[in-house]
Image 1 (tube, helix red, strand yellow):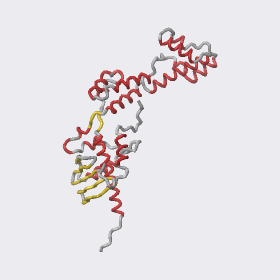
Image 2 (cartoon, helix red, strand yellow):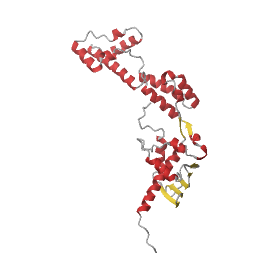
Image 3 (tube, rainbow, N blue to C red):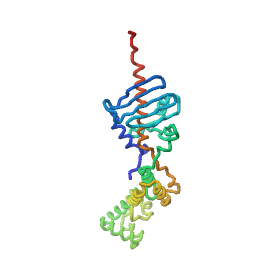
Image 4 (cartoon, rainbow, N blue to C red):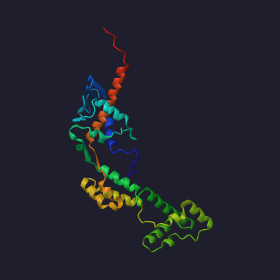
Length: 295
């Protein structure tokens, strides 16, 4: 249940696969006349994992071994439009382009944008894990406080000349209500100097002012997360489980967007992004090349 970073991307694996399969790809310009272009991107000697980009006024279409069957429309020159989109974004920490996939999907011809989003179990589990890590009673801060309580109790027993076994025995009695909270934290055997050091290290009145749970926040969170896995295969069941556990995740959790864009469409976006970059590099090279002398 790893907590995501600020640059978390649910599409990291798709981009990683794309990078590995296209590392040796090159641009082949089959036709380039104004807004009419036919570009092919492939690894030399094979059409596997290759694709074509075809443009005409107001349109860009993709076809090939990947990125097959998509047509976009927005501006007169769609290469320019996708170039502008590339300039308006940054990149994820894994190097994947931070493409506004939803915005690109809206430019698909025939109103196909809704077809490209599908329920994704990993998105559901990411939301659950992220929410648990921030939860007041189950999250990272709650776990840290619990660990501070145990560490303080252990130090108290050491100062009293009692070891780990005695501490665990007293904790079990405390959790069975056979030992009161006052008895668990009794410190009258400590000197003023020992208590001051203990208080300085752990903030005695803060850590002793809250009952110690028998099960740590992290253990409770893991059990809830493992329970979520049982409902991850079905979008309907995932939403229903969130509704049933609204006391943990909040009343609005059942409305979480659990959909991600289809892998094939993602690869298409990455393919267009790479093709545009290759084409702009080609144009720059053409502009720098010396003009051919007349025969």
